[in-house]
Length: 435
DNA sequence: TCTGGGGTCCTAGGACCC
DNA sequence: TCTGGGGTCCTAGGACCC
Image (tube, rainbow, N blue to C red; front, side):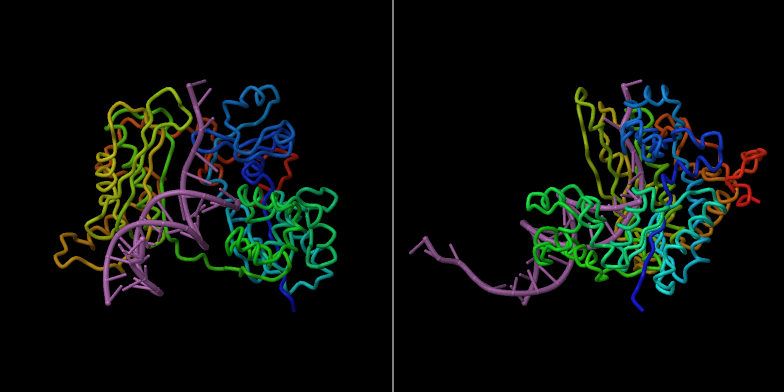
């Protein structure tokens, strides 16, 4: 039997999550902003119709939003992550194998569904997800990941398809591919698109039919795989288990510019604290850390400064205290007086599995004590919320640098007191998923 | 004037994704 | 006034070695 994959994704996912918990905005335009309330990163169809672009800075569209009663939210990742888990729980009932590709997209193995039933199966899946979670989705089906992605794109752009498109049949592909711009293909970004257009390759059909060798020359092996996948030749497997994570970063724009070393040390300490949580959750450690900071790249008036410093730890660790110490050392080395910093962060590459690294001959560290302390710290913060307990070494006092989330929705899925009261006539299905 | 040839490893930067 | 965060993969080119 030939393989069939389905890509299921949530429409305007973050916005749809907000709508599930606030039925009053079901028909209003909705947008969700990036960290620091910076840019629009999710828009409903109604918001797109107003001309709000992806990634558009909020200060440029604030008036437009006010005039049109757009519901504007800061991002609430806890909520979106919870909703994502609910979707995937449903997907697992509907497919033997599921790969979670991103917070709002999963690949499902549809191979065992007979070809003639796939469209109907996809429609049933959509309806079920909608009923159980309140989230609208689209389903794209194809013999390869790239074609499933493309089918999903077609389903989204053509309302008459009922939210599902199947590109399993080569004859169906022959009809659609010449109608779609090459830049819509998964893996073809702006740079590749420009190169392709120069060669007169304008549609997905053109791309599929170009010689694979030319694709490789133009866009490396990645481009060559894309061409093959468009022909129905699979180059990317379904990955049920997420691979070992290779890196980990915590970076933030500041709510207000940071001008003092004290505030900078506070900020990077908070980032190191968060980094420690992430490392421990994945059972990983790091032996070095890059600390960076820079002024605003948009501000042309004030002097700019951008720099980074790599700090090597005495031994690899996921202990928050070690990470804070390294982050502070890095920040001290990089920080310069007289600049208004807009952003800072820490980046850790080459992560290793905790405990697998070499130990120094004379180990000054009591690793057991450290592990016990971190386990207790994570348990308390897991129970009472992130930040309930913070090491004094972080020296967090003023938080004037803290990222803005002025328009965050309540913690519907994590705080009992934030549960909405069910309204009569509210039938999005959200109640079902909360009981 | 002419001034090895290959390997490997590492890093920085580009490109792409959501 | 106000412009996100966090990943992966690939390649070119330099350092280094025999």
